[in-house]
Length: 169
Image (cartoon, one colour):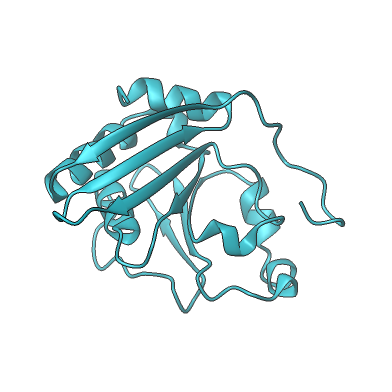
């Protein structure tokens, strides 16, 4: 946590699960199940994994399941891409891969976004460590040698536990 910012959420006991996605169809099915959960509306989901693990692919499936149409691009250079679902849900897709200046956090108003309503999805959250609140749900995607994915899910808040319970993970 940055010295000049108070924590936004408390950290309860962790609960986790591990999944195995055999194909992109499994990724899409998980995204649809997650999109159906009311707890997703104001959640913060942190996405971890190496380059090419499937973080952005998962986000695209989740955004499609939430009704986002048109091109869904990675926010690698813009840092954040905002979206609005047909039901009015504000969605913010962050990619902190190139993030390295804490002043950018304050100048860009990211603290206000994270403190406000809407779904926040962050790739490479470790690059903004100390600035982001505790993720409700952390998802670590690991590409295996057979092109499947090992997916570790970790609930850090009651909302995260609710998300895991509702997706049957």
